[in-house]
Length: 305
Image 1: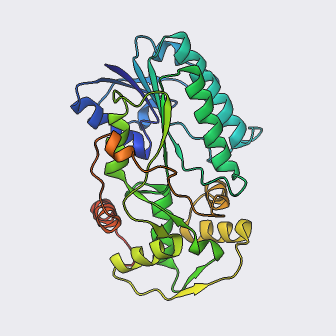
Image 2: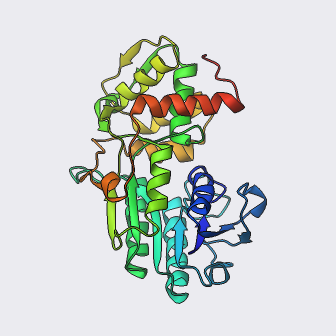
């Protein structure tokens, strides 16, 4: 099949390109800055927010991967990330429908059990999912929590906090649970979703281990072989603590604040059959972290090790 890969310069997109090629697919990438794409595939210039290049890129494409997110800091005069994500999804969906694309594969976020109001981040992910599935009915959306990988910004945030905080001061969200997933597993699921018999639905995905956020951070510290006493804080104070965490980790607060706004309850898969449906064998959390840390250290030092 001819496959269009958006977000090819990003963490997940870079994992997908060689895997899709190994399955015999003809892969073409779409990027605003083609020079940033390192995959050995043809790269077309395009921009989902203004629609530039979308119709040309989707010509004769059977499956399109939508891995576009807009949570980075907005430029002067730009709309908030929710509006940018809504516009990009609408433009892409319309172009895909116009060109007769058979399936869009989208990676979003776990939405929780509905017991709490959705954060801006998760509400935007859900809206993008709906736009894409309505435009191309045989599409597939995978919903994941934290992806464990050397280039995952969520994982890197946690590692930097462990590296740089001598005492792990963890807000009240430390007790909430989720199911982090190995980068290798989510990549294989996404590749399988191109032609598996799962069209027209959303699949919640997670790794085999259910962990609290506090437990996950403490386990990462153990696997990094550093001792970090944990101190529980009774409140979330999300805006403040997220900005402090971003400063400690040298990360963009415009990314960290919306992510931490999502930590107001458990984020667990509503159903846990995706790995079986997509024929993927899952790695345990410790194996995922060890793999990610080894890849990290292959290219840059870990200060705590």
